[in-house]
Amino acid sequence: MYRCPSCGSTYAETASAPWRCECGHALDFAGTPRSDSGPPESLDRDRGLWAFDAFLPVGRTVTLGEGWTPLVDAPDWGCAFKLEYCFPTGSFKDRGAATTLSQAAELGVDRVLEDSSGNAGAAIATYAARAGIDAEIYVPADAKAGKLRAIERTGADVVRVEGDRAAVTDACLDAVEAGDGWYASHAWNPAFFAGTSTFAFEVAAQRDWTVPDAVVTPLGHGTLFLGAYRGFRALREAGWLDEIPRLYGVQAAGVAPIVAARHGDVAAAGGNDLADGIQISDPARRDAIFDAISETGGDAVAVDTAATETHLDRLHWRGFYVEPTCAVAPAGLETLRERGDIGSDEDVVVPLTGSGLKT
Image 1 (cartoon, helix red, strand yellow):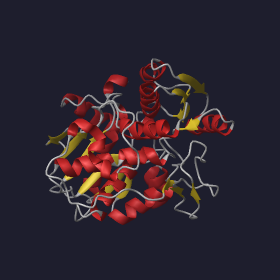
Image 2: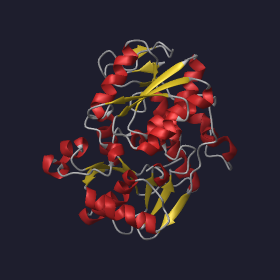
Image 3: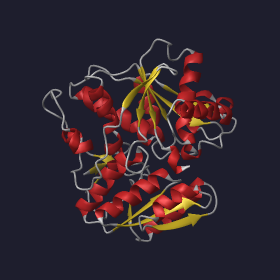
């Protein structure tokens, strides 16, 4: 069952269910599983994300062995990096794609549609191929060639759309409303966020069921940011954790609506052409992002091209071969420390979200 957290409306969990509430708000699962016991002494990592199936509302139907990315010390940044680019398609989006396509398979869906600037499209197309489900991916006309090849080689249909990122979404939604397929959206589909919540489960397990003081993630639609929040919150509610970390989102200067709303247009101004993966002017779950920031005592900051490029070079020089959007999180951590929001001696985890092999 799906439930709208805004108006309370509910919808049956079927292939014909709406992709959002009639009131316009994003839907969530009406109830999410919880574990009745404490943290296990060991977890079967060969089961990937489904080592945490007690917390997942979707069964293990479609998988490529995703999950359990390394958590490594990064002394040059004074934090730990979680290497989310170590996934089958090279980005953290595989977490959500695995659960979304598992749900699609359970519901008997035969064609999925998605709109994406690259990583989510590649993940959905790849897991659709694994499931034997047709896929149609809507992308910006100027999407990077490396990402487009990854989508095309799955056999998915690629639809190039002229205009900004919003135009891509609009074109995809026109096809969804016309009945061309099931909307496997990384921004709207609640199953996707069930998958990204496993980021938090893994961080806690890899740290012997403790949490850092803060987690700093890139922030566009908030798929990883909100997944982290929901995962840590679920563990706390189950009694596996005593607290949850402060969550900080880092946006691209010039396209930073959360920063603008919290700190004014000047704080969000500038430009960041490198961070194309998070240039989202109207996040689908905007209210949920604000709630997560407020409830964890976190915040959002924007970083420009120069800061992103500086940290991208530093990452490459230290052996972390990531794509440009990844670098906004380490750059944002530096800004947050300069502002005094995160202390120099605080324990911080930063996910590196996408592989440089795709650029």
